[in-house]
Image (cartoon, rainbow, N blue to C red; front, side, top):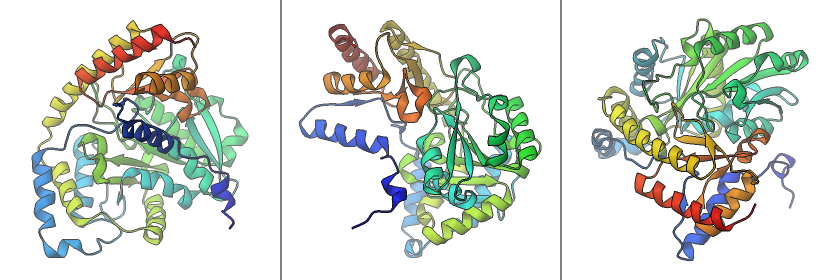
Length: 390
């Protein structure tokens, strides 16, 4: 039996391997504290769940849902962008609901990338940017994100010949894994470059509403001319605590949305209709609870940052996302520390190398568990660090 070269050459999805290791420990009766996954542990509001349940009672709700989302959901997404970012979108041409935004992150490469095309990818960055490019036959050019530049890519450092071969560039702010944020001036320069070199900007923005300390994250699409050169991916996973619902969206440039729709309609279908009803309720319903939820995350963040610093990690206080990006204590590599903590402390922190070569020396630590669990994890880490040698 022969497996396609594109799969043979594709690296395994690292988070799947870790999940397997954690399950094996749990089967043996060990309690693992997983600080490596950005999955919200709090549920969506009751009114969202009620809307979904009510819709599920309709016998007609269980048919095939279509490919492009209900008109109600597309209008609700457009209304969210108008209310939240001041961005006007045509629900018919510039909004495409997705089965979770990850679907779109992977499929958009099939819509844009031919064999040998270059895609500019942040390093560290969400692995699907890279893997989607490789599956489509493209070449990845890494843009290092360095602490001294606020984890923004140096757009002027990309070689001219790379820009000329590029068909797309990924950006992701608020950033996973670093927690960094980007100013609108960065997006303005990005639009200029995209126009000049004729590449598509792919902005991944699922953390825009998970923010702290008065910070309010922008959208790439707020910049004049952005819709001419790019699209933005967003999700209800983090904003509305709906990660398992798998509801996302691609919005912006109508030509790219149309191309992604063609891919999507050939390889999958739409979102279960009751889930779409719940998504509409989330987008159109009361939004005040989000600030209260972010207050819970903020408390966890502060406990985690203080605890990590006391243990010899170096980290900034993130103004957004669900993560602390922490430099590991002296003498450790990212992988060695992560493996040691999982094996000996039953605590998982994601090594920065999972996100690209520039992630070496860092771990991503999620605050998606309660404060008491964070404190227990820190205590376990402290015991191991006192006993273990790098």
